[in-house]
Amino acid sequence: MTVVAATRNPGKAREFSRILSPLGFTVKSLDELGVSGEPEETGSTFLENARIKAAAAVAATGFPSVADDSGICVDALGGAPGVRSARFAEPGKRTETLLALLEGHTDRSARFVASVVLLYPDGREITAEGICEGEIAPAPCGDGGFGYDPVFFLPELGRTMAELTPDEKDGVSHRGKALRALLAKLS
Image (cartoon, rainbow, N blue to C red; front, side, top):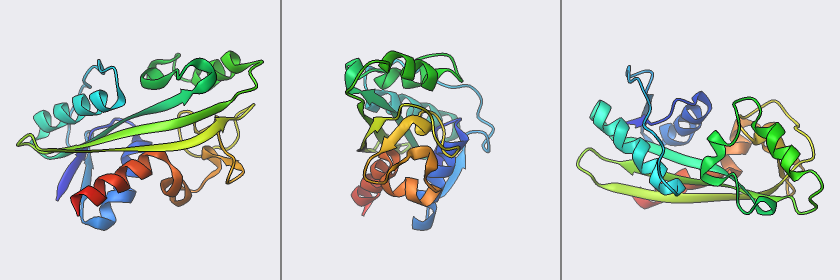
């Protein structure tokens, strides 16, 4: 079955494809299908934003769509940046801004949260969530991944998300967990 990855983020699109393709899904990106524009993420939760993105992709393509909304929730910041993770600071300055806000804090616990929606053109939907617990590193480390990955430290692995191989990341990440939970619901 062909599904549209409702994202402009090439890292996310590759992640969707790596996890869904071996199970018989053909994952196409919005760019591959010539879809322009992005819906405004006006939801107050990750799930609401994922639904908005999935609905826009279905409307634009007529294909089922898989969308996620995800972000980092930092305990010392009251759960921020949360659903505003992508709009938390100007691009290229997000991790720097996060580290500056955490200066002097001893509690650096955090989690990545992802809500995933598979939306069909007839309106049926399947949802799932994944959470990856960790902490904010004192400085960026690693050059893999994207977004907050260089500062998201996984104590059980002794590395940041940006230091993991794509397969390792898929096995522990919030998005990987959410997609596997989604697939379990499809079975």
